[in-house]
Image 1 (cartoon, one colour):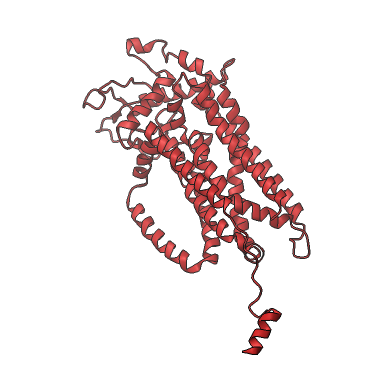
Image 2 (cartoon, helix red, strand yellow):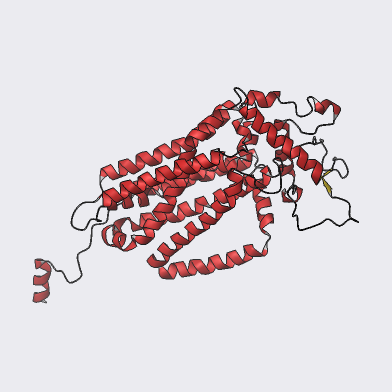
Length: 427
């Protein structure tokens, strides 16, 4: 494999890794006086996954990316026809698609809390102004509302039963004899110190809470749109978001090429197959963390933003990303099934048993548990364990990569040297 290939892929992957670290680093620096941990755990799919298991995935897919790049850059009679031009065209398409998708996500009307300048968040008094002293808030201060979500997330497993449906089905009607259900509203109600005690929390109807959530959604958008209201974290995030999209598209492209170019790799890059298989399996396992954090964010956001389902931005496409991740996993399974039929059959049996067991449990309950561990309820210990697990995996991958040895190609069994032929004749 050419050194230039390793240098090119290493540079691209290093830039993506640094962009992952930069976004989280800017958040920690800018919101150091506004509870950055609450924001990082609330948006864990952005600020916790990418600087940990996102970098692990990059390391895991480094060898597959180098082999595929070398395959398309190679010249000679056995080279892929127009390989370098195909590679450059595909690279350009991925870059353009990343910028286009990032623009669509950034163009949504719903703004994120971390996009608002921290001083404005600290000065926010809710609505009406200084309502906390009178106890008549229609909308809590933004930072207090997000802290409410974090506090409750750490005290109970599950937030889905507290979400409001602000877009009821027009084909359904409520039963007149039953009074509207009342629940705690994160967007409007201060959380008492002993909120776990029965009857100690103010509960309001869905209609009342939906009005508060709408005020909350509008307040975040208005603060962001005010003069000087955009935070540095939000600006950096918008600049670097294409790198995250490019990262996902590169993983899909590598997986497709691993399946379509399998025979050529087995012929020309046999010495790298163990490293490819090891990296792809570890990278796929690391990527499982992303949909967990993604759904944890969607569930937490439904408690503050206007409810009734996603209304724009990332929340509206999060289920699509999870579906695409499942398709991506099937592509990898196809590749490994062709490479190691017997071992993958055993793995598939185990996966079927585990999948059947998980299917027995309600989907919402699984996400509820993950919100506590990897979402808005993540404690300092959870985050520390997450970072340690990612660091240990990254060190293991680097150790394996440093010990990669190129195995020389073995001659055909029928081929014999002159000395071997002479020894055979003497016997």
